[in-house]
Length: 566
Ligand SMILES: [Fe+2]
Ligand SMILES: [Fe+2]
Image 1 (cartoon, helix red, strand yellow):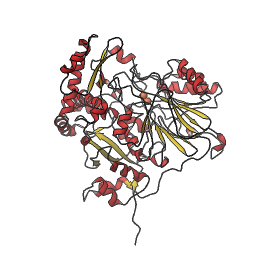
Image 2 (cartoon, rainbow, N blue to C red):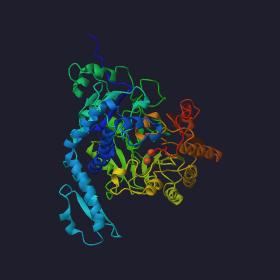
Image 3 (cartoon, rainbow, N blue to C red):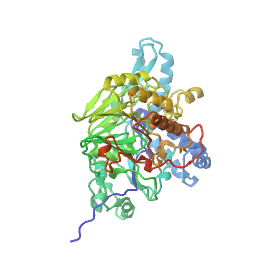
Image 4 (cartoon, protein in one colour):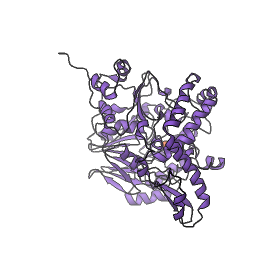
């Protein structure tokens, strides 16, 4: 009897999680932010589109307005948008009322509360908010409202029925529209799977990356109707691939997957920072590591902060069956936009979710430990949770600073005193940064002034600040990363960068100046790279990373002040 063919997801297949047809990100999961985003961003864009679809369709494709609030939907699809709006207003009426209550009550409350006792104010709360909030002051009698996020996940404001997975084959890296401005309308050619993200069947789908299955098994899992199999087959392959063999070398091996995503392997233990993994498009794209380059088991995922390019649900869900422990920054629970990634991770059925606060550590083995260290800046001066990490592997200390800004070098001196010199540092130079309200506008219940919006940008280090950080830590190797240059980040960041963009020039200056100071390694990472901290353990014995294999691309767009990554 012929052997049954076994299939896994094809290299070009993307499985995009959706919430009510919008690409999912953390703020669409947590009920308060999701409700506010729905009311104050998504519906606003869609209604505006319906007023003038032609202008939206044109401006969404204009590089000058990239990342702006314009839906990239052809005029011929306006009826579908109208249907989505009507269906949203009907199905999510409770979320919309909840959001309206928050806006109205909060605005009234901050003017009303002047230091007097707040007991009686609970009776004034709108019905939609009752039982879900606490009214509090800080020590200066500034009022605010704390939300009980855990209770909200159990309420009518969290509806798993609006979650789904969209499976499609990526033709080119540039085809994905910006996640904040364009919903994913139903497309008959694609496979839509209406399934809650927490559903164990989602893990079954993604286990195909590890253990291929017969077509019928996959078809039944996805509930593919008879006759619809032709839609499924192009998403699958019967060719071998992955997972990667784990690294058992005694000195760490690092694999750069793009942006802030680095796989650290040491003595059989694997850690992955800010996972964002690109599928390989059907048309040739930039060379990259993909899902088949990751090991079967990822002991620890380290999340630095809740920006859409660092907490990437699409990649996290796909890797969920492999992830043993998800480490997230500790949320204070004070600002409603500072959502708890721990609660969110638990809600989405990750096996274990651990919050780390500054200088708290997680020891995985006697040789491998993760230590959270402070992350200054890049959040518009909002007290939202964030953390950098130092990974101790063998005798190496490696810092993943992501978008940290060295606003006070003394902090890094304190870290060095506490942990010892940190010889290897991964740091971004996103020195421009997005305006304050770019993707957080729904959190500001009173619109900030233009001056506030422009001055409180989400900016990280420039070259000078990064060198201060390196100097304070006693670093000998620096890798400039998290620059949003890889094309598989485009739909998350909304903007192309050219080699002439200020933040990339800062990165080049950082590398040059570090080399001038005699660093053992100083490189800008782009695409993919493999790094061996102990040169003797590199397979070709050169000890050099492969970062140079992907030279910076030629200029793609013009340089404007508004180009940034987040
Ligand atoms: Fe970032
Ligand atoms: Fe960021």
